[in-house]
Length: 127
Image: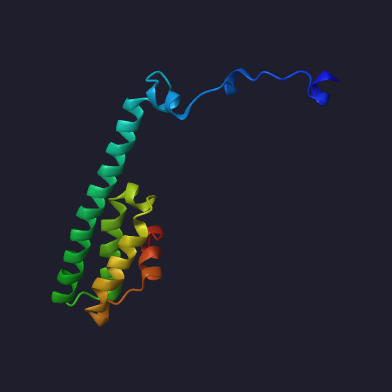
């Protein structure tokens, strides 16, 4: 009854009075552990590096396929093969950028034309 009337306060040990800086300055917290943050940043940069590499490979694959007059089905299979080598890009937020790049590059070669939606489907299909 005292709690409901406001005469007694409930103490929450995990919600003690802390400043915002307390969570940043404590090196012992799991969430703020510099090693964990460093790993997260390294993974992000590794994915970014993979996207750069993948972009170069896809641009080359489009040009090469156009030069060789590769049939569209064969071209799509070639792109699928390349995409399958980048599983982390597949699950990253940068996947749509890769799809847009493919759509842009294939506009230069109407016989290989892919929309970004069609490019996205190539990540999933295993025909």
